[in-house]
Amino acid sequence: MGMMNTKKAVVEIDVFADISADGVERSLYIGDACEPNFEHVESWEEIVERNIGYYIIPGSNTISPADLIELDKTVAGLEHAIALFRMKMGNFIGKVEDK
Image (cartoon, rainbow, N blue to C red; front, side):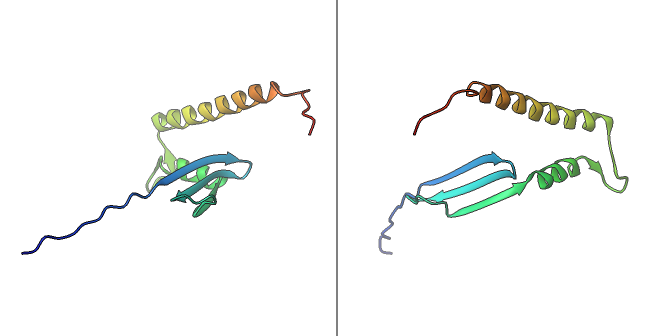
C-alpha cells in the first residue's frame, strides 16, 4: 500500500442576516468575494406564517394557551426591537451631514 497524498484547503464562509422593510435578508459569501454568492429575502408574511405554523395543533387549527404565551413573547421581542430602533434613530433627528 502506498502513501496517499492529501491536501488541505481552507475556504472562508461568511453568512449575514439583516432586516429591511421587506423582511429578513440573508447573504452567503464564499472566499474573498465582495458580492454575495447567494442572497435571499424572506418576507415578513412568510416569517409570521411559518412561526405561527410551528404552534398550530395538527388537525385542530388551534394553538394551545401555553404556545400563545410563547408567541406573545416573540411579539414582545419584536416590539422591543422596534422601540430600540426608534430610540436609536431619534439620536439622529435634526442632525444633517454636509456632503
